Length: 252
Image (cartoon, rainbow, N blue to C red):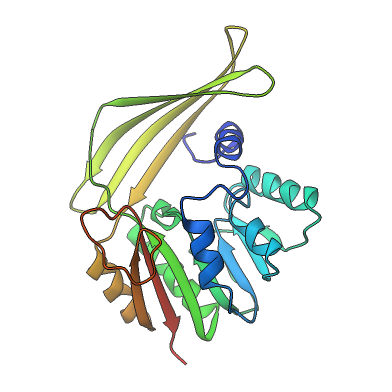
């Protein structure tokens, strides 16, 4: 079965992007959340790369993920640092909690992993319902700039135990009408020249235009929408934009 963030891909994610590793997002989210008085929720929390720095700053952050492997690593990372939080398995489009949050954050384009538009809309509705009136949603998206269909990109990691992991990533499909790309990734772990583990991963991304996403948020009951470019608050997007961050409030 092709899926994403199973055991091997999680191991490489944790190795390649350790706790606190930043694309500019750790500092950005730390700053934007510094005045939050209340609980914060991070869907798709992963290994805790961002959650843990926020906890260490004294913020009250909880998280969930669809990947059991990611949650195991996140829980272990929290315990290693003697940090306590609530972690649970769930999906963005269907989670239900008897609780509302002062902020919900989805950094680093993870929201784009929701391949079906219906799931994306249900997730945004879910976020809205789980925010307090005036609560903030902060979500990163990006727009692909290149579509090298059929090309294979390879990366290699040497692990501390001496094992080698290779990743072959191939963009297999681009649906411009529905704004979806699909890549197939093959992870292989080698020890002394022998293949000991392999994993296939189907990696979909659904992207949105700037005004399209703004209109979706407005239609779902969000207001005071600010769009930022490359983790510079309220900087207008331009040709150099890699990451777009939307910040919006649930209407009071």
